[in-house]
Image (cartoon, rainbow, N blue to C red; front, side):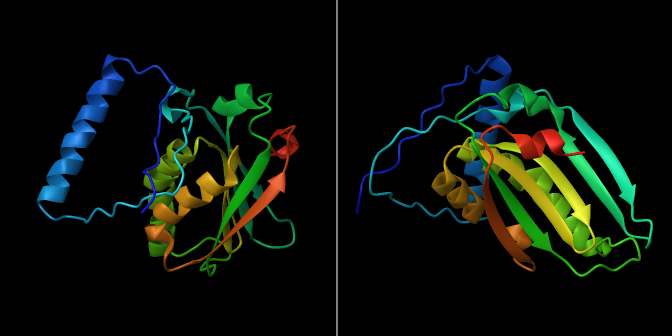
Length: 194
């Protein structure tokens, strides 16, 4: 068995952040104690330090745009994270990853049925922030259109990102999911995103 992976947090945590982490630790401990979920400890062969960017420090500002196809009733919904724009010049985040979730459109507009949408929304609300924190990445956009929901991230370490996705994808088990990696050092895709 190898040595455990060592994580170091380089962000400054204020009193409120420490209190939230303390409450979260207590909640996780109680959940483990009560058997609400199990904990699996995995050893990783080589020790390394990983810089984690705390997503809570980003400005939570998103744009929302809706487009309708002229030839059909299909609607595309685009949400763009405007709070990450200041990081677009950081040469560390050179790759864009699409997490693409496929669903069967249930409406003429191309939207998923209610329970599928609720699962994907729950993934975005609870698991996407975990993936971003664990992997030190930025969730920059989300798209829903005609059988596809995309979550876009700028990353600095593809292996760490894939591990984070694999650890936090349970809500998507009923869907076909693909990851696509694109080299985009100047954030051109983000800049062109509606």
